[in-house]
Length: 319
Image 1 (spheres, rainbow, N blue to C red):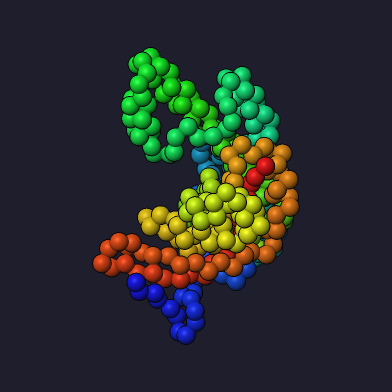
Image 2: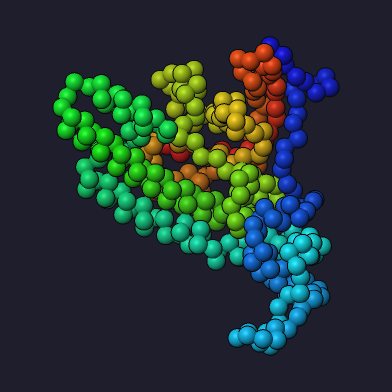
């Protein structure tokens, strides 16, 4: 096995693809935050009000908006102007205010009420504990296992129907819970800046540094196997170890040594009140520093193990 190091240090320090809004602001960063021209224009106009700089305008000469003044900037010029006049303090305030006007934020604010409705419906359907009937991507395997049972075809149909409806409802519950979590994270500290248009790789900037939010259904099977019956208690006492396992055992195809905000379910049926309590008690000011080994091209002749260092926040959700 080959282990790669940098200089004489014990580990390789991979510089994360993070963005720091305080030290460096680029067109690429702006696009990740605003996502589209409409959001960018609204932000630039608000920034102009705050800093009182000049922008080129033109007057509409035809149609129902005749006489109205609009920005005289093409798309490239628009992004360039945002970069030119950007400053962190004003930018953070404006973006946070714009986020409160998005459908995503409004959905998050309604999540508490919607979750209670979904839980009541779950109980009326007489489902048992909230738990996945089969793992994601294993529906075919689940059906094969049901078909192998020595029961009637009608009983098999009912089992599959029951599991499919349960799976759909858990997905719906998780979507609402995730919206609720993102809203709580946003409201927890004023140092948290969300993106206005989600793109893979960046969900929040915390103290100006980019973090990608990842939600995990567990601290990995490897963690449970290694810490056996006491895995949950060990996880609660050792959040850094949970983060290390999540980085170490991520899929090769989605590998990343980026800064992350990890949300990890230790119980699948965590109540929305418990989620709110946990996030309130979570430190979102000082990230953890995680060192982890990762074996690339595992099982192949080109297999290579590297050791990485990353920063992350972790939220452990349990009853």
